[in-house]
Amino acid sequence: MNQNQNHSILRTIDLDIGYSNKAKKTIIAEAINIEVNEGELVAVIGINGVGKSTFLRTLSGVQDALKGKVLVKNEQIQQIDSLELASLVSLVLTEQPISKNLSVFELVALGRQPYTNWIGRLGKNDLRQIKKSLQNVGIEDLQNKKCFELSDGQLQKVLIARAIAQNTPLVILDEPTTHLDLYHKAYVLKLLKKLTRKTNKAIVFASHEINLAIQLCDKIILMQESNVITGSPTGLLESGAFSTVFPEGLIVFDKATASFKINP
Amino acid sequence: MQSQKYVLPLLLLFLGVIFLGFLNISLGSVDIPLKDVFASILNLEVTKETWRYIIVEYRLPKAITAIITGSGLAISGLLMQTLFRNPLAGPYVLGLSSGASLGVAIVIMGASVFGRGFAGILLSQWSLVIASSFGSLLVLIAVMLASLKLRDTMAILIIGLMFASLTAAVVSVLSYFSPATQLQQYVFWSFGSLGDLSWDEVGILTMFWVVGIILAISCIKNLNTLLLGEKYAKSLGVSIQKNRFIIIIATSLLAGSITAFAGPIAFVGLAVPHLIRQIIPVNNHSILVPAVILGGAALMLICDIVAQMPGQEYTLPINAITSLIGAPVVIWLLVRKRKFLF
Image (cartoon, rainbow over all chains, first blue to last red; front, side):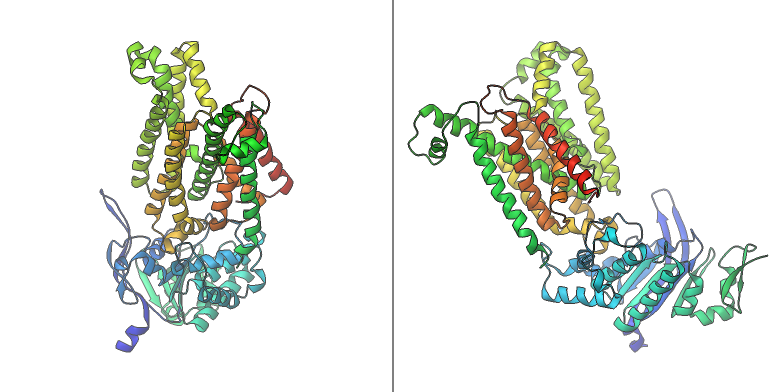
C-alpha cells in the first residue's frame, strides 16, 4: 500500500465537478474516484458535453472542485502554489491563440518558463531539457521552423514537446487528436504511449478515439451521464461498459472487433 | 544563444536614434551651423547667444519629448497587442486617449455650455495637462475596476472601445454647442504637439516614462508566456490577473502622461510594433521591447523633422505626420512580405 502511494501521481477522492455561482450549483459529474500512477497512459472518454473538459480543468487546477479532493503527488491541488504546480502538471490544449510567429525552438523553450530567471534566460540545464524533449518527440529537424510553416500534426507534436520540456510528472492533454487524420491520430497516441514508457510520466488525455484508446491505454476513464467508470481496457470490454457510452439506437458497440458500428 | 543574431539590428537602431536625435536638433526654422549646435549642447562658446537659447530651451526639450512620446506610445502598443493577443490593439484601446480628449474638451468647450465662470477657473497654463490626466485617470479607474471583475481579457478590450465611443460622443455634443474659436482651440490640441514643453514638464514626463518602462521590462518573461494564450500562461505559473494589472498600469502611465503633455498621438502605438516585427522577425519580448522602444523613438524623431519643415516658419500637426509617414510604411512592408507576422 505504502509502496503504491509513492507511485501515485494523481488521485481524486469523491470528486464532484461542475460550476457554481451565487444562485446555484451545476453538478456535471459526481463521486469520481480515480488513481493515475507513474508511467501510465490514461484516456478520458465520453460523449460531447458529458464534461470531459471540465474534468480535465479540475484535474489541472484551472477550475475549483465543487466537492471532494484532487491530489497531485498526494498534495491537495488547491494548496499548491501556481509556480510549484507548473513543475508538477503541464498542459496541451487545442485552439489557443498561439503566436504562429514563434519558432519551434522558442515555443518548446517556453516550457522552461517556471524554471528560468526573471527575464527568462535559458541555462545549460534548460537547453539540455529542450533538446531532450525535441528528440523524444522526434522533431529535432523542425526546430528552426516557424509555427506558421507547420502542418496540424506537426504543431501538435511541437505542443507535446513543450509540455515534455516543462518536465512534469503529469501531462494532461485536451483532445490532442482533433483535426488530425487517422494516421496522425494513431501517431500522436502512440507517441504518448512511448513517452510514458521512456520518461515514466503519467499522461492523461481526453479523446474520442475509443478504438485507438482501447488498444494503447493502460487505463480508461469512461464518463457517462449517470456515472464515471474507470478500468483497464480489457476489464471495461468484458463488463460491456462501452455499450452505454452513447445513446442507444444509432451506433452499437461490437465486442468482437472492439469498435462501434452503425446500426443498420 | 538565439538572441545573439539580433544584437546587430538593435545596435543599428540605437545608432539610428542617436543620429536622428542630432539631426532633429540641428534642423529647424532658424539655420544654426552644426558647430554651434554641438557647442550649445556641450555648454561651450557659441557664436550667437540666441542660438544657444533656441537649442537648449526649445529644440533639445522637443527632441527629448519626441523620443519619450515615440518610445512610450510604441511600448504601450506592444503591451496591449500582446496582452490582448490582438494585432489591432494599441494604447487607445483602453480608452485613455479618449478620456484625455474628453477632459480637454470639457475645459476648452465647456465654457460655452456651462457658462463663463467655469472657464475662468480652469483656463490656466496647466489646465489642459490636468484635465487630460484627469480624463485618462477616470477612464483608467473604470477599466481597472472592470479588469478586476472580469475573467475574460477580451471583454476589457470591448469595454475600452465602448469608453472610447462614449467619450467621443460627449465631445461631439460639446463641439456642436461650442463657438468656432473654442472649437478651433480644441482641434489644435487634438493635432498633438511636441514643442510646447518646458524643462519642468519634460522632467515630469520623463519620470512617468521611466516608471512605465521599468514596469514593462519587469513583464518581459510573462509577456513571452502570453504568446501561447492565457490558459497556457496560467499553466506555466503566471498569475494572469496580477500580470494584467501591471501591464494596464504601465500602459496607462505611459499613454496617459504622453497624451496629457503632447496630445492624442495614438497611431505610433499601433504601428511601431508591427513595423519592428516586419523588420526583425522575432516575437521574443526580450528583443522586441528594446527594439520597439528604439523604433518608436526613431519614428517620432523623423516625424518631428518632417513636421517642422526645415527652413520654413510653419510647423505641421505632428498627429497628421505620424500617420502620413507611418501608415504607408506599414502598408508597404505588409504588401512586400505578403506575410502578416504576429
